Image: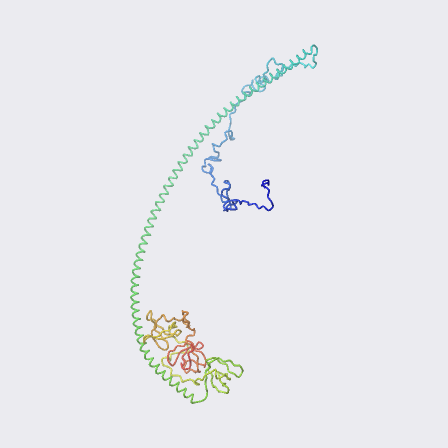
Length: 546
């Protein structure tokens, strides 16, 4: 093991790699927590939303500066060497232009000071006039080899040395001439530079003069502008003062108008309060008058109720006696048995009779085995006797119709304001009425906020208004709570016998028909509705079914 290479591992090796910080902390690494790691952001890199605040050029803040300047060219940016087309430079003339002796060619064809200076002892002169002819000796190509070889060698070496010396001198002369020419050139350039500097100084002075003139002109123009601005400010101040005076006058007029309107409103309010007090007093007087009238009506109603109760008691006693006599006559008559169905029955054969509970079966003829023949309407058939019970065969004689009901017509009479009882109520005094939930109270009057007057069961009296819900013109309850449901048809009854009306204000009854919206206005005669027609009918010819 101590000889194993530490970097060599087997296939079964699973190295534990350390995670990058971006894998352990979402705020770090490429992208960072919000898309870019803040400490990795290039300081010079900005997003599309970046709006750099660039410093403005001097030409953007001062019109006198920048390209073009105040008058087309900024003076401090002018190239000193650059001049306009109108510029006329005073050039210095060449020496050959001022002195005919000088210059190329000179007075006699060659300017003497331009001749190449070579020492007299040097045979080879590089510059001569055309009048001179150079006497050039022919180069001796033939070498005298007579004499001693050493002497020849020394002479040859001396000749080479002389030639070298001559070349060196010639090079030094050329170098000296060039140095002189360079010095002259430098002097000339220096002179030219001086002239340029003088010209520049002159131009600078001229520019300074022009600048001073421009500054004076600008200053005068600024003074003129300042005066104009002062004049404008003075006029503006006068205009503002005039507007302020006008505003004050308008405010005074508005304040006066407001005060006048306030005074009118106060007087109107006082008048309204006086009228309101007068109206309240009148309403109180009217309320007292209505209360007095209601009290008188209540007393009259109480007297009428007592008389009506006495009359109803006598009438009820008479009706009972008449019914008893009619039943006695029917029993002695011995034919035409009438029975009432106590259960529903559906015919099993064509010769049987079907009926519902409560139906009246006429002309019953018993047969064997508990069956009988009977008639319902125009249908005759057999039925089981156990499904019916015996009933009075003939209708009782209706009691005389009260005279106060003679005004009832075939149309629906005006019952005044009507309501439906929400809860049962038992009268505590003689001037109150008793009713059950669902009963209709008609001819309602409202003499008191908590107690009303109305008619129910043929009796007129007072009752608490919270026990009754007013109904609309079509008889439907306006607002009835769930715990006191009321039928839309009001109090209903089923006709036990057929009845033919004798007056126009009476209803025609057919045996088994349903009468709705019954108002028990009298002990012997009621008012109800059949097929939309309202009228009176004898109460002994029907029975209440709800």
